[in-house]
Length: 383
Image 1 (cartoon, one colour):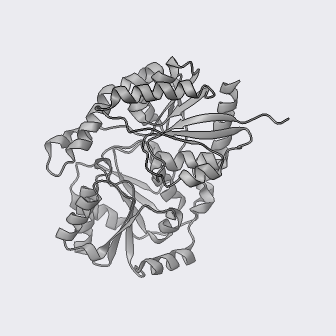
Image 2 (cartoon, helix red, strand yellow; image 1 turned 90 degrees about the vertical axis):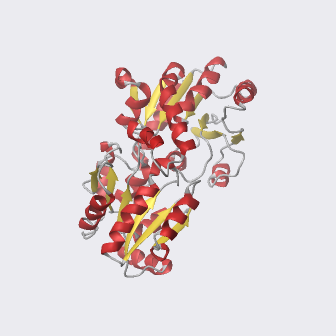
Image 3 (spheres, one colour; image 1 turned 30 degrees about the vertical axis):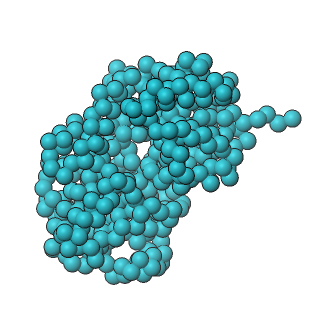
């Protein structure tokens, strides 16, 4: 008789195509599901982009209401009931950054022995200062301020401290716990991203941008990703070179605001909003350089993917330096003007694109090796 797989409860908001969600799905697809299975406790009732795939892989989906101030007491009751009804989970792996403490505390009270906090970001003080600036999404900034203020709580209830990189780990768990932090690489299926010139030409043609130089960005339309500044940078570039196109992949609450900004600058013919896509590896073939001026990050999986595709990346200094797993990444300070950023991107626009398969493997960011490590951790801790 075969042993049943150990079921790990992964806790996220919604399984759409975000960085943390893409990362956990990369591991899920690769893991030996005869030994380890993933189930998901989510905080949106809406259907997520990965829901069907999760079910097809043998995972279970449990959906709760969002965590909010108004319904917080009711949410805690739901959480307590969940763990009472599901005593089968002995490992809870939460990806809710600072809000993980709520789930991990309930798990501890329910007798769950292995409680993993997994951080994917590090909020910069610079981002919080935007509260005093125009065009700021006040709700998002106040949310960041709240996260900043409660970050020490996660360490009280987590038995294991996971993070995407050292910066994100120290930010959430503190410098004094640096030795306890386990780095889980934002690993990818490298071979799906390798540059293919023939495919690049075809995809550019399909998008109607043949013979154009393409600037790309992959990420949610929220305050963190700094799209307003990104558009300003592109506008400065466009003034110097009308043969440029900006491709924006993703969705989010700030998208209408960015569309209006693009319209006012009269560059809508040069900016393509592609929305949420399941063909990002293909779309990266058609892009010539990635522009990523985030206000804060951990170690973005999208930039690992970009490097695997052989793309040069211009990103902010708020991004973890460990993101540069190849020599394709250039960092720039957000204090510099949009003109400075524009000139920097234009300077790096011409280069020979190469096959980066070996470089990603050497940097230990391929999914196969990393999955084996995580799988072994789950197996050993479950004993």
